[in-house]
Length: 260
Image (cartoon, rainbow, N blue to C red; front, top):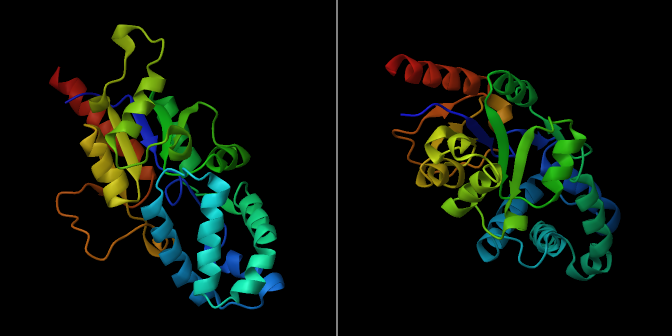
């Protein structure tokens, strides 16, 4: 058992969250161009469209804007939009939504996110981000004033690989350890990854020989986390807020120190 020297975080639904539900924001943007689409129908169509496009292209091979254009178009059509009307206005709709979800206009930080990162820094523990997102995640984190020392920010669009592949976790360590003396290299077993997806975050990190915590926020805050109905959470280490990360790291590092 090793001390924890690095904590990596997932981004969406872990450290950042839409300011208002995505289906509500989509509905507002759609209305002037394709008419009223009920938010509840958009909620279902967005979920199915996102999953379908993710299955077809996990690493944005067609480019982030084209990738999201596909998601947005499928979402609107499945929610009842007239295809011909939609296609006439699709470029405008895509630009508006891409801009909104590139900044604090579309996203906010969870209240426990930045304080947790700051407390870990005070403990001498490095922090980083590993996200199956595009480059807008970096812009969002900057706009929300996340600490600059939370680095690297590893994004599947830029790396050409996505969680749960061990490769994206190893890329994070490779970047972090670049130019570092042999004695200061951070090992996978000295890392903890925190995220809301059982397969991508928890099992992905464990498959890369890292430690992992699965985030399951309580109440409304956890409503949009990526949960599957048939999840097997036996023997999975679960936390309900990021405040618990610092405590977990402190307990782990104290235990390691006491064993020496």
